[in-house]
Length: 151
Image (cartoon, rainbow, N blue to C red; front, side, top):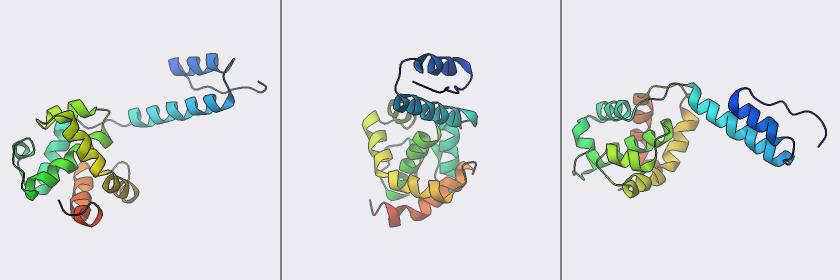
């Protein structure tokens, strides 16, 4: 391989420098992309699952307890799904942890997040990355039926 590889600093940078001695350019580019993604997600302070639940509950006009309750009416179900999707989008939490935060299993969290992927994509294009959680929730709840459809 010819040329020099500019690696980012830190432990990941040293791994890429080591990798550059034998890896293909495609693998090196992929490694750079992964590091950039990790650094971007880790650079801003992530909200906690509790903060997301509180913000969504406030915007939706329900209690935080309602989001974890057995209630299935639309007034609670939609904010719960929005909160789960925001937890996945804004944090590094896995589905098991998100499900537990809402007293659900991991498949409920997976389904909610998968179902709301188009809504997250829409909000991501519309909102600035540093927008408040409540603003994300407000936009997602206002456009829920239009983008996701009726429950």
